[in-house]
Structure formats: structure tokens, C-alpha cells
Image (cartoon, rainbow, N blue to C red; front, side):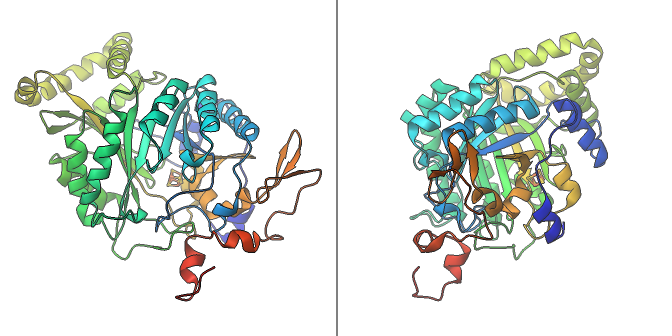
Length: 450
Ligand code: SF4
């Protein structure tokens, strides 16, 4: 996209029913095929609801903007309106990622209310956090409000003190896993793959395999040059293929990871069973996968209760005996291959999924991928592709918001009868510059503080 196209891009209202709209987008962008889950099982992969722009870390690959720390938390009523808007756009069962900044910096009672509102609207709330303030007590309260997933972002871009390398951070991951033990939560981990840790990804993957009883999804984001992050583009090529190779090395299994969700240039998804510590790929047969996808279109799997998810799958196959018959030889082969591990583990098996997400650099957006995007941000005007949003974040976070009481100003938090001008006519001013993070901070001459 050209800078002019990026500046002009706005959220669009849906034209069709949610799943049909997703299918039409996949068709328009050449991404519709038997392994495509968008437009089949989902109307949208995930919608991010940013409940604060503030963060208690300063990642070297942060997607926030230099002005994020100056922005007040969006009023609760506006977030409720956005939650309803997401429901209208994509329907029930949509995954809503409650995020920020770090969402745990939001007032606790408000964070709980946000999660409850998402769940009350029939959607699935997840919490994306660096975990620093996500105490067990908070997670428990959020579970009671309806939280489905917690995704912990942990990696070396965050500059956590006392950890020499990515593998050492497994101690932090282990502590976070302990916090969730026994809670009805699906536990995910996000890891940014960048120049500084790409060589250690196999060890991190092996850690997730060892924790497969608790960890359900290991997600890897590739280094992207966007936002206030100072690291920029990677010096060595880090691609979906190189990360796939690391995942194979770490799991010791020839993971297929051939399933894109949305555009094939954006991501890959794969699923495995961990039995007796060994990884068995479940996505190794495209024909079986296509059958399963067709049979389970419209089925919602309960991520908090694996037993119910298995029952839902069995029910879907019973309703499609033709597909079940075609899948049977594959299932028999799998069970035979796993037999020794199943005996050793006394029948216990844990699902572990892998996701690779290749966000685009802000200055290098591909129109087709934006059109096929499966990861949206809920702006005040509607959902917009995360990559596009990050490329022009200030245009949204510095814009006044119309509320029932008047115009809410994001820099002062005050309500007035008329909106203050949004950027570029306005600067956050000296006070907020003291809190600048990222690129502007890095650009200052050594020794000169804001
Ligand atoms: S956020 Fe970016 S990389 Fe992810 S699906 Fe959307 S366009 Fe693709």
C-alpha cells in the first residue's frame, strides 16, 4: 500500500452475513480452498480490544506508538459500544482479545467488567498480557467473569532483568503456568522471533512440549518493523519457513503446519498430540483435514474443557458418516503409531497447537493480505486489520471520541462540547513527551533525557 492509501484506509461495514462475508474475502484474494477455515468455521480469527495504551514494559519490537503512553484509557462505555459492534460484525463465538498496552494496567473492576461484557454478548474473551500484574487472584476473578484464554507474552524483546537468554525465560513461563494451575483457562504463550533469539526457538518449543498438559497453544510472531519498537527489521531472514523448521527441531516431529488461517502469507497453524512426551502431528493428511474441516464447520469447540471438545468432534462426525468413514483409516494409523506412548502414558494425551504469525512492516503493507486479514482491531469506527492499524495507530488513539456526555479527549481525558483537533493539528505536548518510549527515546542523543 502507498502512504496515501494507508492514510485513506477506513474500517468498512459488513455487506453480507459474517461467515459469508469472510468467504467472499477469501475468494476475492484467492485464499479459498478446502483447508481454509476462514469463511468455513470462522467469520473472523480474532478481534483485539485495546483497553489501554499504557504498558509496564518497553519491548524493542513494540507495536504501540511513541504517543501511546500519553493517551488516557478509553471510557468504559465506549469499550462496551465496541464490544457490541464486534458482535454485530462477526456474530457470537467471536474470539475477542482483551489487550493493550498491557490490559492489567486498566482499573481492575473495569477490566473484569470488560471481560464480563464480552462473555455476556456470547463471545469468547481472552487476555493478552506480559503477565507481570496478572496475579492468580486476578486471573481467578477474570475466570469468574467469563475469561476463556490467557495468552502470556514472554520473550527477550521485553528486556526483563536477570535473564541472559530466551531459554532462561522458561523460568518466567514456568511461574506463569503455575499461576493458572487448576483454573478453567486455556493457556497460550506468545513469543516474538527476532535476530536475538531465533537460534533458541527449538529449546523454547521443547519447553512447551514438556508443559503440554497446561499449555494449549504456542504462538510465534516474526520480527516486524512497526510501532515504537527500536529493533526495526531483522538482519537475518526470519520467515514462516525458518520458524517452521525451528518448530520441527524443537518438537522432534515433522510437523506439517500447512494450514493457513486467512492469507497464506500471514500465518500457519498446526496441531499435535503430546503423548508420553513425544509429539505426534495431527495435521499430516490434507484430505482428512479437509473432511474434518467440512464436518466441523459451525461447531464451536470448548477450549476450557477438552473432554467437551472431543465430544463435539465425535458428534459432528456422527452427523457426517461419509467423512467419518474416510477419516477412520487415518485415525487407525495414528493410534497404531502412538500405541507404545499411549501405553506408557496410560492413555493420557495432550493437545498442543502451534501458530506462526508474520505481521507486516508498517511501510510494506500488501493490499491483498490486508483484505484477507483475520486479526482485527476494534477501533471507534469499526474493525480494522491489525497491520494497517499499527501503521497508523496515532490516527486512531489521538482522535477524540464522541460519547453520550460529549467529546472525550484522549490526551486530557476531559469531556467537552466540541472535539479538539486530532493529529496532525495537535501534539501531545511536553508533559506526555516525558513518558515517550521507543523510537523517539532511542533517537535522543546519549545523556539527553526528555
Ligand atoms: S494482522 Fe497482518 S499479518 Fe496478521 S492476518 Fe492481518 S494482515 Fe495478515
